[in-house]
Length: 320
Image (tube, rainbow, N blue to C red):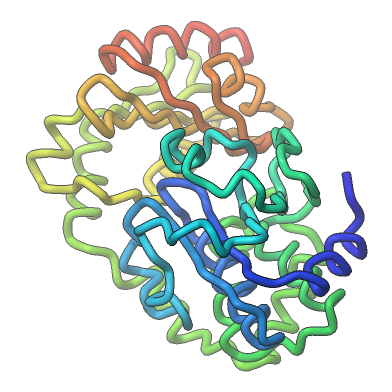
């Protein structure tokens, strides 16, 4: 793996960047991208951004968000591609990956334990609470002044991926970085309203569907929720990627592993895992072709949602 200084030196010496984040983008993915974008623009670099999926409305307040394209830009002038918050190449669709300029230099900047170091240059800090935390350190290393625009985006990324500083990946450094971002002008009220008090009605209705399909194991250590495609379709919640529903599974006293099974397309199940204490759900996710962090991971499986849940639960039961 490269050092932060090496990545900094290389990026400073290059131009014509394309920033890419993973599909179904979350707050860290979007915040990291916008923070780096605004930083590179301040260095007079030519930069484009691409996300293949819809950006959730709660992030539309972030500076520069309208510059993110859902159409892959022409590749002939792209000299450098920076993947952000992507543990491996499969975090973007295969057809998009195949269209990327194969001659471009690939940078991989991330914080996932399961990162495969797929770039030409890689910097992965698995101790960071968010990739946005890594981007903050990169910008500081490059002597880029942290503007209010940069601060707002990075703060959003850190808040969302640290669970508002509740998750175990939150460190003293995380709080120090957050404090500096606040000093740079982050509006806490605007941040709170947009991130936590601007949910679409469909997301609240989706939570209701999930809670109706709530289950807990006989020993009280595993909790899971099912969101079949027909439930999502009934309330028109396609394209919604709620980040908080899964947290209801691990709010319960005694629960050590929480899971949400969400049928995003007929027969395609997205699985989210969360854990408490020292249980490594990334190991479970890897069993099903996924990955992530020790206490937050995910995977995808094809099949009937109930049968997929049964297969996963047989593995999970061995962990607790």
